[in-house]
Image (tube, rainbow, N blue to C red):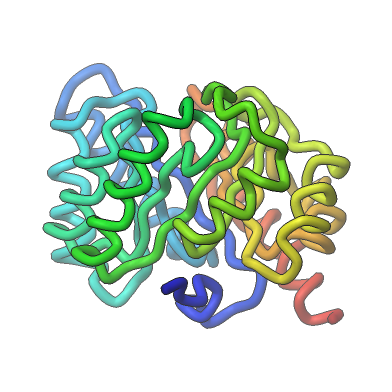
Length: 246
């Protein structure tokens, strides 16, 4: 049974800050992550998402321990790339409020998808948090042979919010694709999963229910940079103005 993902937040149109776990040493990865967590939370982001985009599984552990010990009253999530089992296990152990599964439907041939459906069912029974699931998501294959509508309807039975993106990290998600997803899923929660900026936030959030941001809030506006508080503030200000104007 799906839970209402948006009810987890105290503010409409939630913005989730991505932690890419960059750094040249284990110590540097951890220190940058702590700095970025503080920057996100102190400047109005509604949640953070721990992902091993640059780092490894081993880098995720101390960051999640830090969140569990110091930010238990804040919302945070987990995405262990290409290792869905570990994503759920980390979320359970470190009490993460949500997980992101980059490909929740449409990425497998039918015989493999049957097993995957049972896997998701198993962990939905074990994990009390929310699932954000991607469909036709960046860096994931399309192998189901089914229509977008069929895959989205399957996804809606497996997750609590659907993530939409274009093809690459940091690439703007087209309004055409966002609207296409919205037309199919109705009022089911829809999260922009990549390419969110202060410039496109207003138009994208007119259709979508929230977003995950990583690249644009960096000091360089690309993933390899470091989260900058002025960029976080600028994006949050746009979101706040949009919500207050509704």
